[in-house]
Length: 321
Length: 306
Image 1 (cartoon, helix red, strand yellow):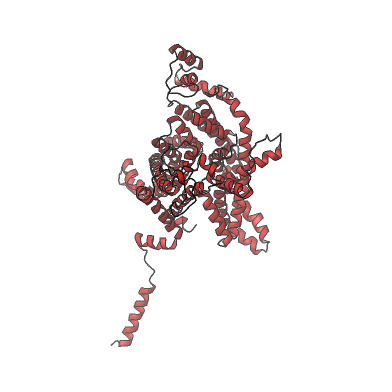
Image 2 (image 1 turned 45 degrees about the horizontal axis):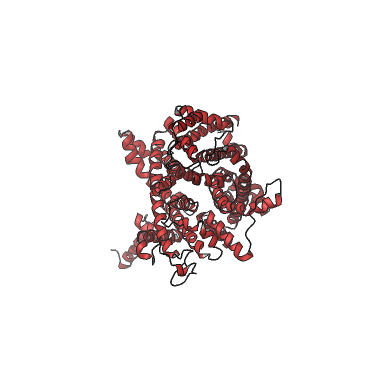
């Protein structure tokens, strides 16, 4: 177990390094640099006429005159210390703009992942146990449809239907979790449900095929023939083995879910990291874009690490090979 | 002397033998016909794909109006014989806009999938063939690449390069590329262990020849499968970008863009504005998914019937 853990953790370092280099390299393609952007307030390329000295001074101050590897090292060093640079838009530190939004996004993500797994595994088990009945067809059909649907469209339609039937919009005024937990949950529950519902489709598919496979195993037949109740066979023998491979999906789902979450935050006008990211992309506010992309990629890498470690802990076959 | 009866029975036995002879493996075409007859979803998928491609190619002929034509006396008109899917808040015919939108979806979908899986396949082939250190390095790159969620990577690329049509295609291709690498690499690794690859090497085929003549043709099946299954994802990513206002810009209609901005405001009064583009997106993505599944079943007998 220990060698596996060490190996797996060591993999994290080069991958995270490549991620950061990739992001840094991409930003070298931007027309104009931070000095231009700061002078202009975020619209590089527009006609402007600062004195050459002005731009030079800012370049020097920002360290843009240094060689690129040095610039990268400085950027990374600052990033690790929590200094994500200064937003082009309002010239505030990026970290100040991100910090108040992180909790909302994490809460939304956590709720969505939990819902996705509960819906997906329960649906998958039911679908497998009732194989080739109308319940199975209905569940598989709806999961296929869900996978093909754009998440934001589903959300829009749900809002329209809610407005049409109830005459009210879902609550949108977000309150901090510690300030007003009920309000907070009532705002986040619908978007989290919609994001989670879409992600549950893949989990349902995988759970179903995994359960079907385990149901054909000899030990299940043995358990049944010695007269165990169906519920006990399922709980003790089938689910334990069948749900194991499903946990590997968790890492994949976190990645998939984030795309959905970014959009859903826009649909519901939730001021999370995703909404900030979309705004920053729209305004070409590169320091914010850069910081958020890096942040999200790190969250993904960490989530994958946790999933792999968890899997090794759950399944002894992994850690001894 | 053999009597007539006996010959007849011998004949019967022989005929019987022929009849009970195990059926021969049907040819590829026959098999495909049989297969599609028994796999309705695959046929449905193929049909949807065909309709969408046709619509995209002949959008100008099919659409009753142009996508920009504004009828100010027909704002937010409900679906009728005049306007099949109603009109939007500018009085533009939604059916015509959807038909033209198919063009963007198909174009972006096809080119980005082709570029993404194509480049991914070349890298995967080389990486899987040579293994070793090169492969290890490539795999770290793929890991790093996969750490970016699809939409976030696409948005990042569009933010840096600007949202023109080629850049949107490039951005979506970039989200598909690492998956192409993974799948073609694993296919290559299993094929290079085959006896015929060994035989090719034994008679002195060069690395290049082994790779191009013996391995590559056998990766065509996974290549086609990943292409058709990624098509739907590509369309969805394009719709997402357009919805966020960072896809291909106006006035070109795109299904995602039809759902954005004012459309959402008018939707409670005129649900057809957002209902139809979304339905078309869903059906198209499903069509490609069904088609991809059918292709996988066709090429990979181990997965058949799952």
